Image (cartoon, rainbow, N blue to C red; front, side, top):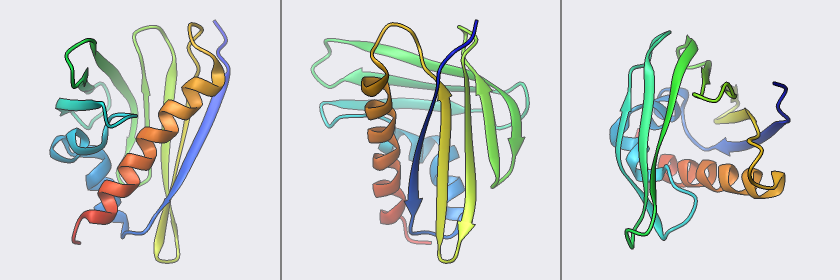
Length: 140
């Protein structure tokens, strides 16, 4: 099956190690991995190696909805690139590029077919923006 690719990005005011750790460590993932303040991410696991599993629990704070987001890593290049696939065959790639005193984080993902493209792009961008905000709050 061929999926439409969507790309989002954010420039992070941080050093590369802090940006990487914030993106990959479960203690940080739970602080930013949600698209809206009415949601949260109560748990996350991340086995950061080829064949390892990424898993995060996303829940509406009012308890009305919850789901697990899971992927299996295909590529892990420390502080450079992550590629993983989801159960339905969709792929996600995130790269980290140093640009002066900042890090450009670019994620390209395969769109699913149930929701409009703009909704998906907006949701993923909101999560990336939360990551940016959280990473900025970390003292390196």
